[in-house]
Length: 395
Ligand code: ADP
Image 1 (cartoon, protein in one colour):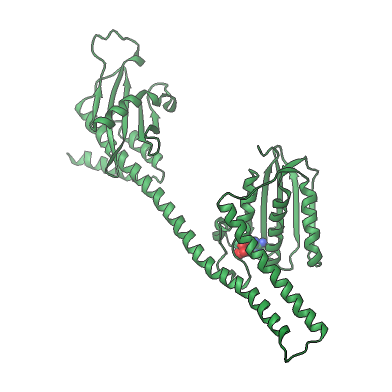
Image 2 (cartoon, protein in one colour):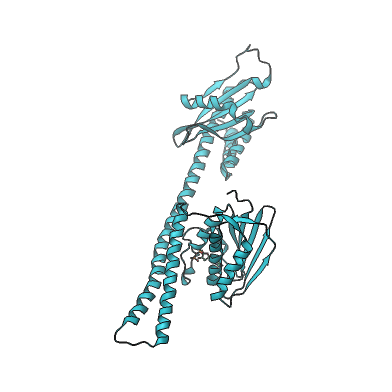
């Protein structure tokens, strides 16, 4: 190999590697070697691990007026043949076949793809109407096949790594959760035990006001414990898809106002403003949707104390769009992508009681309505939760 060819290859190699996306890498690979190897269409077929059938994972048409995807079936039987044989196949029309239409004269070249050392796919090229493949063409195409297999392997590895990262994060969250939850369970239990033991002491007589105070604490802490256990069970049911939803016509504006009124009963100083447009009828699970807003209120009270809350509601062409805004400290941008994950709590949030389940539960409920919930936040200025619920939730 001469120096010029080597440095040209080197450049191509760098260019292909530089692309983040494997399809873009493959595009670069095929385009940059067009000087040495011209084809009309190419397609990559991979064996589906479940069905064992062939999937077209990549197709490209550089030839005259062809669309790649629609045409990808042209190579399927050849791909099957290559995978069975495990070696390159070259198929050219026999001279004197009598065919004259260019598209009937398919010059086919196919290579097996070894991905992770397993014969898992095939790369097929076609030239309609020739010319025949020269030795240089075959060598170039073979190099591309080798390279394509490496790029697909890299794609698979990146996918596996992302999955592993997510599993590891989930495991870390579970670990944190165990310590959070034991703290969260012990605190109310400690109060209940402490105050009831005090009340039962035979050597002390408590006046009525003190007795009442102790009993109120016990009552509140028992409620807190019940809520916590309910959240844990709810999140487990959502995780295992065993939570039942009951859909019926809901007036969501009235529902949110009701929740706000209930919240104001024990948080009378909390200022809540509404900006509601008239809404069309909507089908949903009212109890579950109320739970979403209870969670959002409870978070705003915990993480944005003293802030006013404004709630907006309007209908777009096919959605009801609800915004729930506080003017608290906000959430740092880096943490925003994770706050709907099960058990996730923003680091440093340990002074405020919580389990990281609330927003996970909200998201699952909204998703059960085929809707979407997300968050926007500017640090120091507050947080807005946005909920979109489809008018026709396909139930
Ligand atoms: P929990 O409140 O039990 O920690 P959530 O799932 O309800 O769990 O919330 C996840 C995290 O999102 C919280 O730990 C908190 O850091 C952050 N967060 C939620 N709501 C707000 C808010 N209104 N303002 C600031 N941070 C919030």
